[in-house]
Image 1: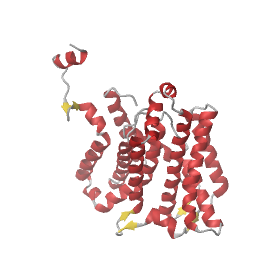
Image 2: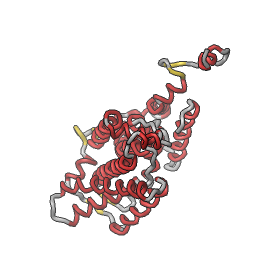
Image 3: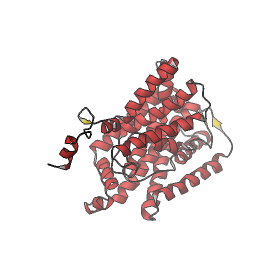
Image 4: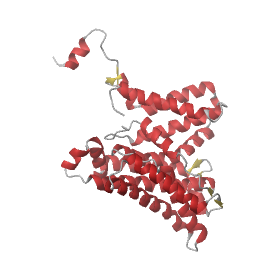
Length: 332
């Protein structure tokens, strides 16, 4: 009789199962979705106006930028890395696009390619200094977070740019049928594409392999450094896209845009069930984590609580999510 059978047969040791899995494992698997459902029920009782269609759309609208960023961060963290320069990458790629649009006579629509290309290059630079200089991800991306932000401040200073052409505003502000922001559609298309990359391509499989066991991946012939750089480049590309959505939404740019966005992005990914030390991630879990965080911050507003209560609420959500993973015996 194996250990598992003994555990089941001992009095008081039987595990509660749901859907054929232990209760804790089921909760972990569907964590973000369960969190969303529980929070909706709570808000439906505490503040029924939370469920108004307009408010639900606003939640998804707010979450859309973080969904885009969370898809990229899922790859980075699954691959055993971390990127703290996401907000600064968003800002720098955004300001480069703005300068192109404002100070050149070329077609503005071409500017939409500037931000994601610049973001991809900035992300690739992160990957290069990590792999070639053998710097820890944490140190390297803190350095580029500061450096990229410094360049933004040098370029934009304390000035704001606004009144962008329709091509830019369309992606951030346009609402389908006057109700549904197109940025939400873009965010979910990015999630679908990210899920495909993660589950159906060598890029995704190699990312999982090198995050789970780097030495084994090297012995298996995987070019770990190459895929590390590609992960950071993909993260940067999506940060550039998020920059377009941010600027289009506000029809303005300021040097502070993207500040501390990396914190909420990493939080969404961890809440969604991606292991912090790599080897396993969940694209749709990250999407759920981003939506849950947006719901919590929106719920605090609907309840009439001061802005700084949002930080406490988000901290509680993160602690609860990570606690579930540790209770299930999974590393995070």
